[in-house]
Length: 94
Image (tube, rainbow, N blue to C red; front, top):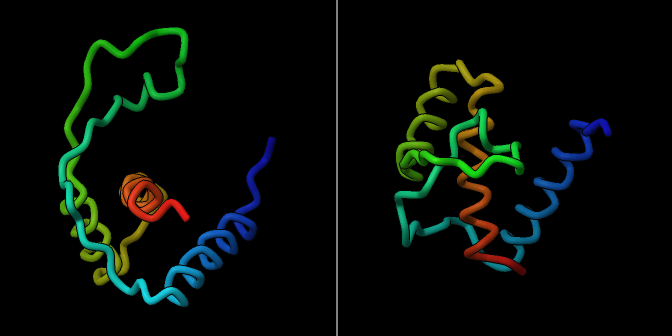
């Protein structure tokens, strides 16, 4: 299966537009730290991870803001965005 970047971009834009139309302009972080499964184990459902790392939403957001200001965003920054989007999806499921 191939993922079309235009489709993914349109989906995120549509969801954000819908949230804005409901008056949601900012997301307050009620939690900050999260469990992070090491990348090499994340997509291996046959082996249970023995080690977990700790990530921080505020740090992920700061990395994105600084990278954007310096114009140095790269594909790796999608990891920072993914954990923030997951948090938002749990806080605003509909």
